[in-house]
Image 1 (cartoon, rainbow, N blue to C red):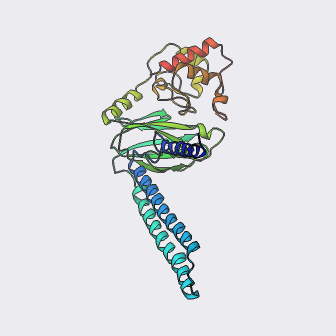
Image 2 (image 1 turned 45 degrees about the horizontal axis):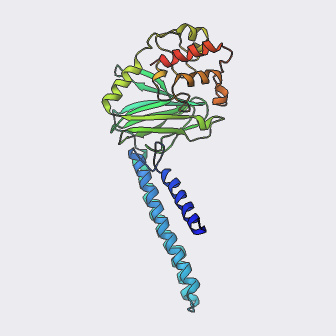
Length: 324
Ligand code: CUA
């Protein structure tokens, strides 16, 4: 391979890597929500604008280095005032107005009567509460399901430190403060699976605090909420779960486990992921989590259960996986 060929190959590879960063479940440039579409428009508008300005400046610099004409002082001064003050002021003021005009619709609340979902950031997971059809509330964790085309209001808060709620494909970020409620409207425009993250450094496992967002048809969402609101089906292993003390921190609705510190596990086997979207949801992952919590998620509040016999850990993993 010649040096030129090698250079071309490198440029192509870098371009391919850059392009794949634009698509996917966690990309602000592959929008699936009304606010994210505006943000993507702003990004492309700014990018194209800056490319045009950069090209013009480089062209002028090249021209200046070749032009040999004598410029008198007055003309030179006028050029500096016009090109260095007037033009940038007009362009930057235009961009400022364009950007500011975008804020009110992006921060607007969802229409009156929209579904309100409460999300609480905790080290290092997301407590999620959905309203049920009966007027009650059901507590879930680490995933949101939304209906295509249906705007929702998120009421965001935190129980410990400042976190930040961000689903790049759907909308911008919103901080979550202890003792305060912030609001964010989401308006998904197409179905799909998306990924959200915590966008504020909140401790050791800040980078291991993700969640999944499934945008589904409205009927599917109704069915899912009804299923999540139901108590747990009796499964083998419940006695072991209670005897091991898990109920001190976790709730499994329909059993005597009523702890409120950790995630509600009533239907944990049906979730899209485990440990705040850091592990797949299968028996092996439950077993690894029980045996080695602190290594999988440094700084986690849950202690490990490696002191239990391996057969017990396996039985607990089977029980949790069966909580569909
Ligand atoms: Cu929570 Cu970073």
